[in-house]
Structures are given as structure tokens and as C-alpha cells.
Image (tube, rainbow, N blue to C red; front, top):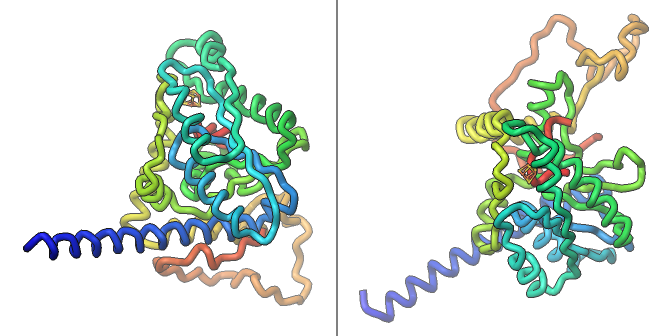
Length: 315
Ligand code: SF4
């Protein structure tokens, strides 16, 4: 191969790479755009506080939201916020340098929650619960100070499914992290714009964009083993049974209370034969027929409608 041919081959490779990256960006934008629309996450005049941990998810969320901001038919502003919790070895310069170069309004909040957690939580016990609660309180306060109307977190589809399974396995609840949530005190609206996005797409996007990732184990906390096991289970299913993850996520958007067993959601006690046929009614003694789902385009789905903390991404 002579030098000229080599140059052409490289250009073709670069072209393909660019094409794939554009496709990935479009896919993520669609996912975020659909989640925003379906849950009315962002409205005219909103000030969205994007919480940045320095991990792949929050960098991706900021990037995609800034892209959408440029093309959206509504006006909203973005302010990026990072909480420097004073973990040993936290590279303080990384986020300010990145955000400055990006030209987005940002604030770095310095609060030494690391010392509090280390002092209060006995050696060997998991620190993420208290750490997440402290972080949540601080971020709510900062949202008030900045006049933010929405607080955006970078949880994606797999985080949401993991939380659903953790709550079922260990908490006896069918409950997850919703794409949109009003805080307990009724004062804040938390949104998860990546709710429809697949983690593997976010990984690829973060690699392509070469985000300056800050490691999430600086605090020395033990990984949440239960969450890791459930996460691995989901990844394994995704490999072995294409379409299963999409189907499980859609299940969260298609809840049928009359076919579960929560007496608070469906009045089983007063259920009587009234002679009225029901469209989604039981076929009494029929067994449901299931086949392994094919890949479903999650972007085309339309939704009808606390496990343990997930570590640094959660608050
Ligand atoms: S892993 Fe994250 S959430 Fe858990 S204690 Fe460390 S900093 Fe806090």
C-alpha cells in the first residue's frame, strides 16, 4: 500500500467513525428528547441545575442537554453544579477547567461531607446511605440559592431497572427511580433526562467524547455488592436475551393494578361480576403466551404513567 492509498484508507476509517458517532449522538438525543416530552421534564423558562459528579453519565447528560438547548423550541437555561465532597485525591481542577472551556455557567460547591461520613459511620459499614442524604440536602439548598426550577440527575435506563429489582429483592416493593419526581418537601422537581438511554450507548459516547472522568472510588467506600450483582444480572440478560431489557423497561410503563395484588391500587374486595366486558380483563383460566421479545425501539414507546442509594450518581 503506498502512502496515498494509506491516507485514503485512514480517511474512510475516520468517516465511518464520524458516521457512527453522529448516529450515536442522534440516538441519545432522541432518547433524552422523548423522555423530556413524555414526562414534561423541561418547560419554557426553566433553569435546569445539572448535577455533575465527573462520571460518564453526568458528562453525557450535560452534553446532550446543551445540544438540545440549542435546537429546542423552548427557552431554558442550564447551570452545572459539582459538589466537591473533599474525598482524598479529588482532582479539583478537572471539572472547572472542563466547564470553563465548555462555556456553561457552573458552580463548584465545597462541602466536607467525607469527614462527616467517616466520623459517623462505623468502620466497615457502608457509607453511601449517609453520604447520599447529605449530598441531597446540599444540592436542594444550592438549587434554592441558584433559583433552579429543575434538578437533573444522570441516572439511565439500567440504573432505573437495577433499583426496581433491588426494591423487589430486598425491600418488598415494586418501586424504582422515576424519570421525574417531586421531592419529599414538595419544593423541588428532580428529573432524569437519561431515563430512556442505554448504559452501553453512554459508555461509547463518553469514550468518543473523551470526557475527563473522575474515578468514583476516591472515598474508599466498598462497592454496593447487591447493586453490582443485580447490574451484572441485567447485563448478562441483555447479552443472552436481546430485547429483554427493553421489555422490562416497558413493563414499568404498562402497569396493570387489577392483575397484581396491591389492595390500595385496586379494589379487589368489591370486585364483582357485573356483566361488563373489560378490554384488558383476565381470560380467567387462560395461560398467557409469551415469546422472547425482539429488540424494541424504546424511543417509540409511550409511557402511561427507594432502593438503596446507587452511590455517587444518586442523591
Ligand atoms: S461511593 Fe459515592 S455515595 Fe458512596 S460514600 Fe463514596 S462518595 Fe459517597
